Amino acid sequence: MSFKNVLFVIGGVVAASPAAAQNAVCLSQQSGQIDAAATQALTDMASRRDPQLAQAMAGTWYSETSSPDTGQISRLYVSYGADGQMQYQNQVCDQSGACSQYQGSGLWAAIPMGNGSFSGIQMISDQGRNQECTGFTGRFLDQQTIQSGAGGISRRVN
Image: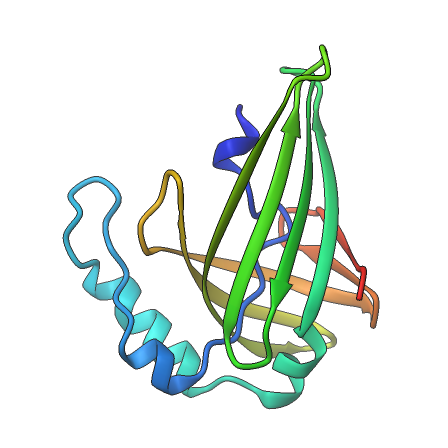
């Protein structure tokens, strides 16, 4: 598995402003057409966003993941704005030390699920994706640490 396709190991936590999300559309990566269900999910989630969760997520988060199968290591920085904007930078290095850089931006929206857990959706555009929307879950272990629904750990760096 290539980390190029798993950029949001942390679960890509997001919180888009209702206005930004209402003007955004999610696109099917296969057909390039509007993904109506994902677009509706983004709009719905943004309209229910929680300002406290958005503020808790605001900042830059770092995660590092290695793949024993490929020998690759991913160093991911994701910056979330309380306004629902987000961007990321990811460095993926192989066993020889050769590294590739990836970056992208988009929107995010999330709602609290209780006990520090949350659920959300993100819309990402980067070198390989155009307005791709994906769902995610996660939970705060403390104010500086998030565990994604997949088990990855991200730590606040600012």
